Length: 86
Image (cartoon, rainbow, N blue to C red; front, side, top):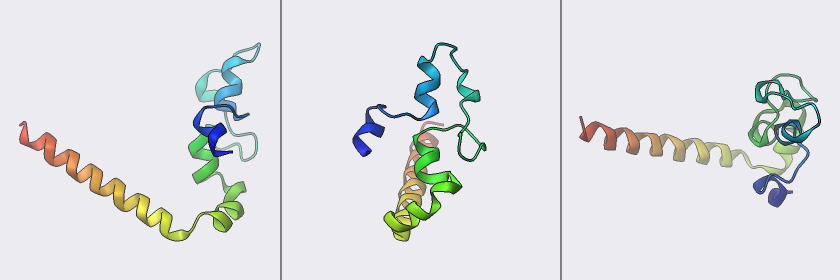
């Protein structure tokens, strides 16, 4: 499944709406399960409430903490780099 997500060989609306006979605009490719937002890889893996039980089972809680910590560190480094050029 991860390989399919990486190469966009899946049936999420972000891809299927692109190639169907009546092409669907990107912003209208809403999740068919929760009808809340764009159905892309990020939404299905991280946000869609209907997959919460699967996330709880397979993604450890510390993973989310680690991802946010890394993201905050990256943003801090980028901000420091940008501020040097001012």
